[in-house]
Amino acid sequence: MNNLSNEQTRRSFLKTSALGTTGLILGSSLQGFPSIRSHTQKKMGIALVGLGWYSTDILAPALQQCETAYLAGIVTGTPEKEKIWAEKYTIPQKNIYNYQNFDEIVSNPDIDIIYVVLPNSMHKEFTIRAAKAKKHVICEKPMALNAEECREMIAACKENNVGLSIGYRMQYERNTQHIMQLGQQEELGKVLHISCGAAYRHNNFESWKIKKDMGGGSMMDMGVYPLQAARYSTGLEPLSVTAQSYQVRAERITEVDEATTFQLEFPGGAIANLSTGFHASFNYLRVVTLGGWFQLEPFSGFGGIKGRSSQGDINFPNVNQQARQMDEDAISFSKGETPRVPGEEGLKDILVVDAIYEAARTGKKINVKKA
View 1 (cartoon, rainbow, N blue to C red):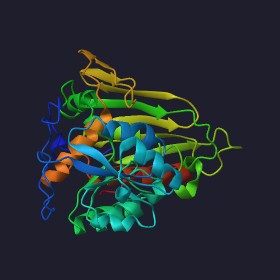
View 2 (cartoon, rainbow, N blue to C red):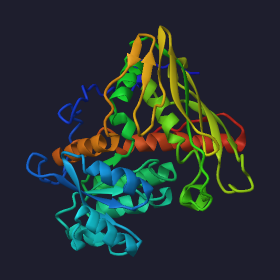
View 3 (cartoon, helix red, strand yellow):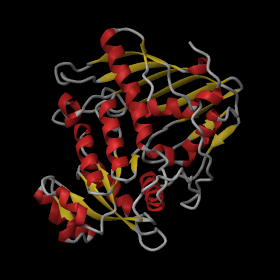
View 4 (cartoon, rainbow, N blue to C red):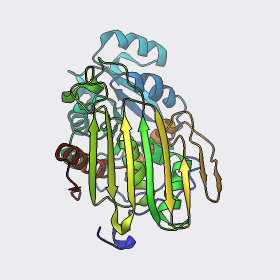
């Protein structure tokens, strides 16, 4: 493996107290951002695009806890959901759209941010349509089907002077931020080895998540969690990957990977052994360093993160991760600043995902392309 200096390859660690929305990282200013009302004057309106489980059970309730954002509108392809959501969240009819009339949202001043919560195959289309409507965008992870789609999405947002954030909620969570600091700042010594896995037992065989043309597969679902964890635990970009894919229930899951294991080599010698799947439930992160270790288990659960290190327990208060994410993104967008997790971060993950698929297909070690 190549040995590159940390100074040349390390992503700048965003230090923050992260004890509230006042502890935000102020990223570099994006020139040409529209002057959208300040969060100190009025909350920013978010429209959820796609009303599946994540929007219904997670994001909409989280928006009720937000301080700088609120649920202003919805976009759905299911007319039956319109009345239910309108009554439950007091959403006016003028803020309810479908996939056909979505572009009319450009003239709606109530909506500042579009949150794309659709199957992966639809992320590119609706991110670009939202950008052309002059709305800031939060796009759920993984960002897109491939790196080229990511680049198109980033370009569209820049061309229309709107912000783009990817929904990596863990980077807004305090226990996760702490282990990022431990690893990236080498507070327990240089990172040597990372073991991480995120998976669940998926039994819905009608779901889009097992359909190839919709961007399904375990790597494109939970797989981005261990990939992200390896990257943010080191602050480095992997040089190469090897990977193996499996179909444990081949009679039911025929189009996509049901489980994937993959190995990453990082500059400086760190290696990661990572896994994901629809076949079993597990969620853990363990990092061994030259001078100790740290771990989170679970490391990406909704119900709270728990951790320990060779120095002791990691027990920052658990918060609503999605509310924290949307609050911070709303402030970043309103100030015209780069969000904590911009589109470029999503692109970096997908460049690795592209290499993982090629490695699994060919059985060879694949070099990761640079962003």
